[in-house]
Image 1 (cartoon, rainbow, N blue to C red):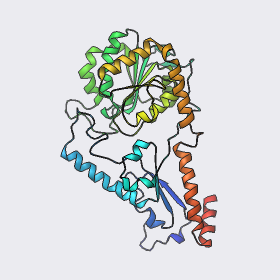
Image 2 (image 1 turned 120 degrees about the vertical axis):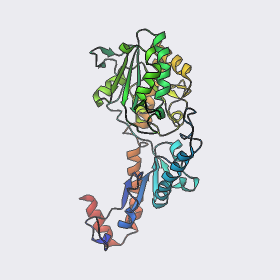
Image 3 (image 1 turned 180 degrees about the vertical axis):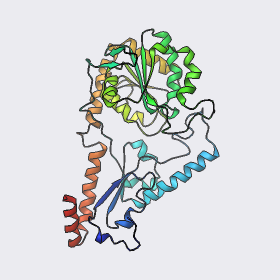
Image 4 (image 1 turned 90 degrees about the vertical axis):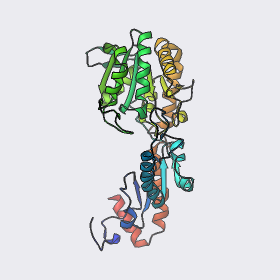
Length: 355
């Protein structure tokens, strides 16, 4: 809406609460438009030059340009924290990245996943592009990321894969993810346009192409089936935002081999509902993945614990996940905002909300 004389009282509705992700400045002027509304932000991430994702991977040292870019990004995040009345973060780790001065504004609200449709199923089948069908009980190794890149440990996984295949001659590896960039950047070397190309140039000669399957981005139905047939699911990440895919793998009864990094440790308790490995420890990644696919019965209870843990804490039916917690926060803030308004404003805002 463009108007030099805009009056919020003339708007067809008057929100009590605005709930938004402000990452790129979308809500910067929200309270100028609706000054009486309470603004609740999703505080997903605040960058730090040390102690988190930046500088974590020794393979990619931090430059001065990186530090300057981080400070510029955070300038907007600081404005967001100052402007909002309250905020939510999905993990304790993500909350802790924000400046202490603003942490009392932030409530940890776990994100929920669709556990009604993600669960163990021993009858599941997954059809490979080659036509071969994988099923539960097969030695299937899975890796999932929105895009294949170092932030999600793709380079570490690929370096561990030759040892896994050399030791286990029947296992199949299914790798899900695109070739774009979600976090970080493309390979610095102009010879390779994607991290998949770069890693295949590094280790591809030691892989069996008949047992290594890059399937790109899957439909939800195929993704679900793949997780259900997985014997070992490898999830690696920088100390960064937690992926839904790890929770979805646990909900599906996968034996998750997860990096010993924050915030994975908030969810994956070693030897209880998964196994932790060093992010860059190629031998440990290979060793624990091999054990999971060669002795699946040994880890049956861990797989069951994983599904139960996610069902208990991350189901959409639980009050701890992001959406329901946001609604609860919305209600509590909305009541205060509503009662603080003149009666005429209250009547109009409630009528608008019902409409």
